[in-house]
Amino acid sequence: MWRGVIEEYRAHLPVTARTPVVTLLEGGTPLVRADRLARHLPDVALWLKYEGVNPTGSFKDRGMTVAISKALEDRSRAVVCASTGNTAASAAAYAARAGLPCFVVVPAGGVALGKMVQALAHGARVVAVRGSFDDALRIVREGVPRLQLTLVNSINPYRLEGQKTGAFEICDALGGAPDAVAIPVGNAGNITAYWRGFTEYHCAGVIDERPRMWGFQAAGAAPLVLGHPVAHPDTIASAIRIGRPASWEGAETAVRESGGAIEAVSDAELLAAQALLAREEGVFVEPSSAAPVAGLLKRAREGRLAPGLVVCVLTGQGLKDPDAVLRTERQPEPVPATMEALAHLVDAALVAR
Ligand code: F0G
Image (cartoon, rainbow, N blue to C red; front, side, top):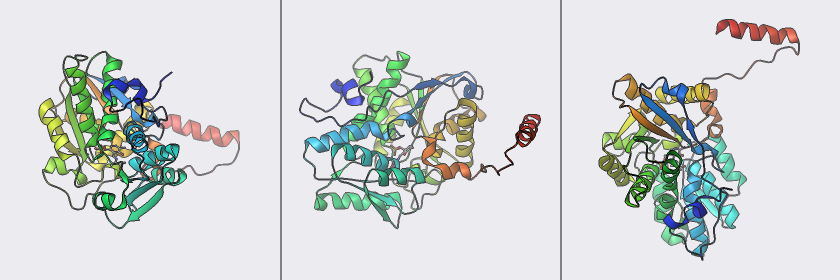
């Protein structure tokens, strides 16, 4: 049975026999081959690392199991994070399991419905600020020393340590490293963590080569592409609506050392990629998580996609953000409860195909 990322990768993580392990058995997520989607990407073998099946529905759980376990070990009195939603949901769940109070600071109106509901359900104290995620992170960083709280954003080094296990799992599943990894970039912690994971496996001789790291930001929130912070980040992908990434240098290092790139995709490209994943592969992700697929499709269209084995990291579950789908999809109008009504709809739909 899968034992969660701390037990599975204990030798690679900053835990000791005295660390109380707080786990929901996160990690061990599917690496799914995506041949139908790959038809749009000439000469690419495409795999999807589906992080949406983690316990709280995103990759954050990998880092949170380590951060919350260490907070408990260090006798923290409460934890706090700023979040666009997924960190909040994950912190709330793992803090609940540890018996620690949890405060989450979010941009008012900037968190998808499912994530807000998760934080509330797990009993976190939710503080909604009139400002952006970057404002929320700023006040949390300022407040941590005075309030004596443990910060569980990815600035907390234990978070990235846990998240690097995603890279280990990809290599373990493939029996080596892929040629490239495509990943969404917001606060830039995850691309930093994956690069660390590949580098550690490389140093340990587990893999011969490290993959190229391709990061994708939303065009309206692309500070790493522009080379300067964005004061008012704007995109439908609320998870990555971030103008001043905390792990800026980590992302740049990953790209430089791997010979990769960070590029931008438009909201229209994000939504098209989200729909394609759902309709051609049966994999439902939130808009931010579609960024790597949107990016690969764009590279292919522009003739800039090298052949090889590519893994897309799909960071979050689609159910978290129902409003994003309901922008384009309508709910059905009720019809009479008769076989004829059903037959009429089936015929019309299949003729239209
Ligand atoms: N994908 C999803 C679904 C996310 O929630 C995030 C970040 C990212 C990608 C980007 O990862 O920040 O490490 O570059 N969400 C954070 C949060 C900011 O508060 O939940 P990153």
